[in-house]
Image 1 (cartoon, helix red, strand yellow):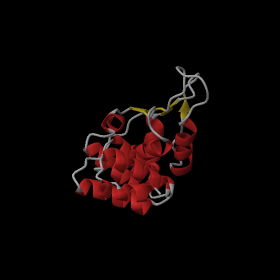
Image 2 (cartoon, one colour; image 1 turned 90 degrees about the horizontal axis):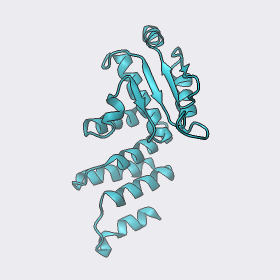
Image 3 (cartoon, one colour; image 1 turned 60 degrees about the horizontal axis):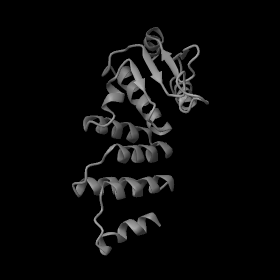
Length: 183
């Protein structure tokens, strides 16, 4: 339905813009139509419409949700090169994921750890802030998703908890170096 509406816009004199592309890409991702989401992403760039943070989020969420982690990581690096996610990806050693979805947070961590392992980024202690810690009430929103990613996909990396703050943990330098050595 979202695609029908999107494709009928121009026939009705409504110009497609970044907002209409974002909404349609997001709808395609939610409907597991990743190919269509990627086609729309390409189409918008070909039409000279610059993707924004919401666009990249929607495409990364679609790719992550379909298990296409390598493409999601490549897209995140492309986004960083365009100035999107630059703060989150360049803040080493602290990575603040407060405003990230689970998919974007996992992809960001995959990029950072991949760059460390490949030597593109110097090994360092990594402080991960997922939110809902000492300054918020309720359970940590992203912490379980990011912790599960590290536990499941990066064996050997040890998570050090920050007492009293469930929304923050540390990957200490010693643990990172051992993980690199196990390569």
